[in-house]
Image (tube, rainbow, N blue to C red; front, side, top):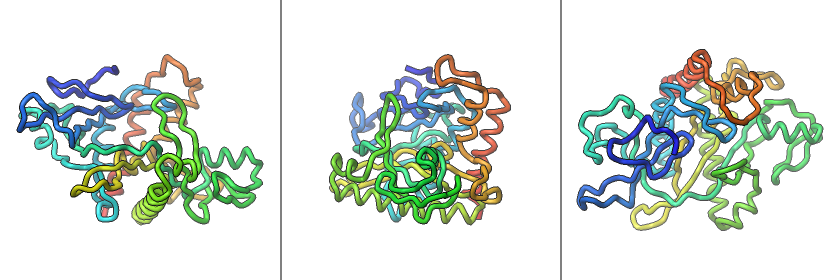
Length: 310
């Protein structure tokens, strides 16, 4: 297991992701037992890239936690989510913690257990990232990609005529791979696949509209969904992180011009730094300089302050 600087005293994580730790929650009505309906999520300061944990960037966790919780609340009328409780003192009271360690403040959430759908659901509104790489590989000739038509001679970063739904497999070890809607439907059924497609595009458009008014372009976004019991019925709900700088591509609207590299406001800055120093995606991982940490946090802070601005 990875070193855990964000431990819950007396409780080992039941699962550790690249950024988040998860803990079973004690059942206060049944001493010695754990609840089966909720888990504790701790958003650490760890940062990952190229499927590897690269180290820590102090202060990342609370910002990521706040942004994700905001969007779950914002989207709640349209799409249920897994969020149960977010107040640090209330959440940690289940573990008998009265004096809150500063290492845990504003980075813990109680979330409902959900049966995760085995895909990441990506919506792309602009020709960027791996979508542009595929388009470039085709020599800008356009054609169909994962069932979506792309016209000829588009510029990098150009806005698409309509958002594209491009799901991927969710791999715990190794690279995620793009799949078609038909391949998603083979796993979860056509009705569920279509429900997820429509929900993903709607959430992207709502987020894009909200952020654009605040000077940020949401170029693409990754959503995850699960099924959980709500009033005795299994319902589709939004889970995991939502529209954070880790899971979405944000650009400064002021800097945006099709064909020109926009100012990045997300983790792409960190990926570009890794490429710039010539790291070959193998161990040992490079030490993250203080200047890079500060620049990254500044971008994350800007996104968060823009989100909550009127």
